[in-house]
Amino acid sequence: MMSRFDHAARLLNLNPDLYKVLRVPNREFTVYIPVFMDDGRVEVFTGYRVQHNFARGPAKGGIRYAPDVTLDEVRALAAWMTWKCAVVNIPFGGAKGGIICDPAQMSQSELERMTRRYTAELIDVIGPERDVPAPDMNTNEQTMAWIMDTYSMHARHTVTAVVTGKPIDLSGSRGRREATGRGLLFVVNEAVKKLGLKIPETRVVIQGSGNVGGTAALLMHQTGYRVVAISDIHGAIYHPQGLNVPEVIDYLATHKSLEKYPHAEQISNHELLELDCEVLMPAATENQITSQNASRIKCRILAEGANGPTTAAADDILEQNGVFVIPDILANAGGVTCSYFEWVQDRMGYFWKEDLVNERLQDVMVASFGDVVKYAETHNVNNRIAAYMLAIDRVAYVTQVRGIYA
Ligand code: NAD
Image (cartoon, rainbow, N blue to C red; front, top):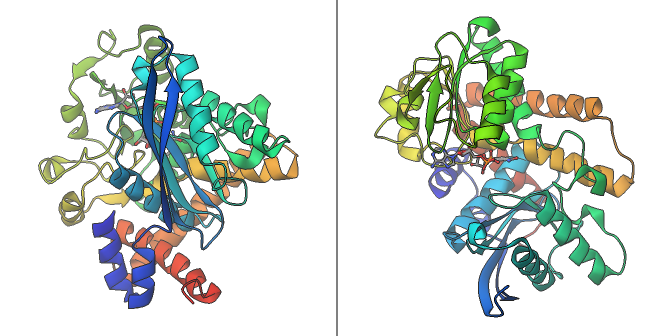
């Protein structure tokens, strides 16, 4: 994050005072969370919330539960949220949170107690006007419902807009679950048009088949793309003529793995990344395209569904090879855009039909794609640096106008 930020700031000729303000988070919290475990012991978990920037509005960002969460990781993710919200021009700053824990080893009631205590510790610094959390790795709609309820207990009234990614029946938004995958479809459609490709002849390879990859695969298939390969953590499946995506997703739901899927060739996650295709969509995890394999990536369009799937060292190689990159802070911003819609609907108390949500999502993603590509062409930089420059420029502008460092 910092190496791209520094690169973009240099090219922008960012005022040194603004550089000093924007390169660090606004504030960081570490909380120690005592939890009664089911066996009667008390465990003390460490949790973080980093609020990177508030210049454009309340901070926004997910909460992840994982054994390897670190403060540095949360810092980077919080900054990414600032840039992502600015790229799609929604009125939020950036934040991120996490708790060091192993959710696979915890019961639902232990997770609930931990979540409620974490929320109580952060009660003064989160809120609809302050900082609006959302799900991230190993947190979900249920986690958001617990946070909303705990916050509401303290506020003494129901406050739905304190988190997004809630269940639809608990003031969530229609279309939120599919929004990141749908946003990817919209930006890939734009890139395909721009490069003069034809949808039925466009082969798509997707790493990951979870919320982002699985949804994108289904939507791309419905739109007429030829999805030729998809993976999960155990491995990938490949069919050069195109996979029957709905069948694959059903298979995955039943068998929890693609390993023995009968109607395609089994390949590895590494082989998947290097397949001949027009669109490669890494939608699993970070650091998948590195200086080690970037020269063997054969796609025309790289649509980054995951956060940080490409290392900074790989960027130059992809650029030399003419790969059209739709960078993560643009490509996967459909999720936070729909979270913004959820926050708006909660504050209005009036909920939109799914068609309207999707139409507004399309408007934002198409306009943002256009902004980034135009910026890249005008300033003769690649799309990733353009997205950073555009975002930093927008945040720097409001920081200056507000006089935040006065
Ligand atoms: P998920 O847990 O639903 O799915 C992850 C998928 O990746 C699964 O198919 C899993 O098997 C696979 N996977 C996990 N680790 C892997 C590894 N080391 N190698 C290969 N495959 C692996 O998660 P998700 O919500 O789909 O998120 C995927 C990525 O997209 C993450 O980087 C996340 O931060 C990012 N993202 C998600 C959203 C969202 O709305 N869910 C929004 C923006 C960005």
